[in-house]
Length: 219
Image (cartoon, rainbow, N blue to C red; front, side):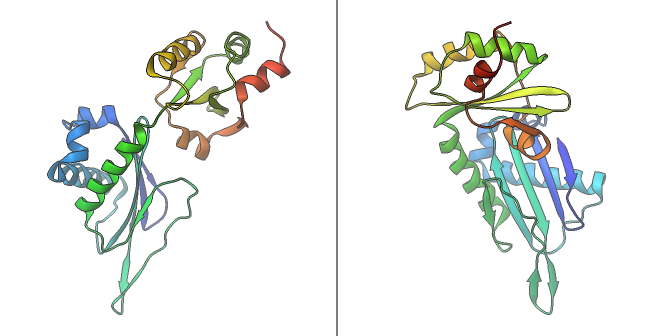
């Protein structure tokens, strides 16, 4: 699990579903069991206290985003002064659900995970990593399909292609076939597109594969 201290009152978690399973939780029970959701949340908060000295005091503002590979959770601690709550909420362009400080934590987790479960089933979204830029060029000339959304990022010395398959366009077998073609040139990465957008550099945001094919000759 990654923990980032945003400021004195805000902390951000990123935990993969594999991390969740390694902690003894099942992905489905986190979505459907209030008790297990609460247990995971406070285990994360206790770890934040040990690693970042982040105290759970007063009301909390919580933003949860269920991603393809895991969960991103932002927690902001409110300060009570003269009976009113003051919050310094970080501005974010990421899509997620903001919850008021008086919202019950367990209800928040329960509702948020259920909402995102429905969203995740609508489309297949993956990040493909490449060991060499030449591999992406080769892919662009071997994989001809302009109907899937794809964008290219650079992060920590490597290139990553974010690909989204829409269920309205392709059935599961067709998606698996296209994914197999792409993975001949790269590998499925544990990174999420949110991390690439926040910490990486966007190279080509619109139809990257076609743009690369047009810009670079076949090697």
